[in-house]
Length: 260
Ligand code: SF4
Ligand code: SF4
Ligand code: FES
Image (cartoon, rainbow, N blue to C red):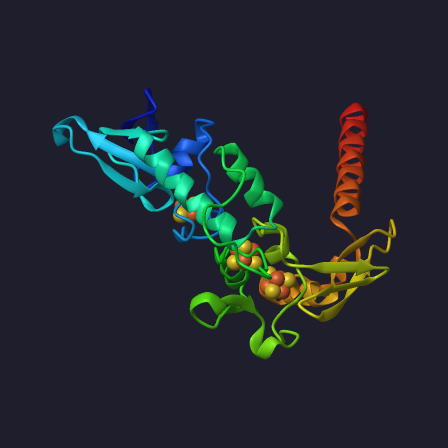
């Protein structure tokens, strides 16, 4: 365990833990658009910047991206230092110029008192902040169906050759976790479409609810060695069935105890 001080509060943390995680556990609001518990930190948005120092540093201070900085014993962290807030404002201002139509970035900017970007706003922006969360999550799940393509101002997230990605299984993890909500998908009846690829949604054989895509079920079945038939029933019905069975077993044991 290491001991550190964050915004005046003494805390202890596990060795190797990233500073941002500990900051968040304290309920301190530090913007962190490219961070997600499921994947390794990447340091793309730089918004989680904080000021650090130590008693032994003799007043010397350092500015670090907290999602990539492991906790250290004796660290004194200031998440709201003047320089930090100013740097965050500049970064948010730049994001607002890149994504002028994003409600999420507009809200973040407003939280920092920015109503209009001081840079040239990008025309026809796709409102993607290029945080790479979608590609990292997809890769982490074992599919790597999408990637970052092109360079400079044309950099963007795309499927191979801009065609329906062969490796996509329609799980939606990229879309649901996108911080600016810019990956479109539709669901109509038992069809889901994402990245221009259409998927069949499984209908729970017990309650009729639409569950995951058939491609996702196939992939999970292979990865976790679960029979494909398992996915014909939704999670809620599986849980209800387990509860009923447990209740039956408990009833039998009570009856057996009473009889003995
Ligand atoms: S929907 Fe497709 S691209 Fe998105 S995370 Fe799932 S597999 Fe990857
Ligand atoms: S599409 Fe969303 S998740 Fe992917 S890089 Fe852009 S902002 Fe990040
Ligand atoms: S959350 Fe740390 S750089 Fe984005």
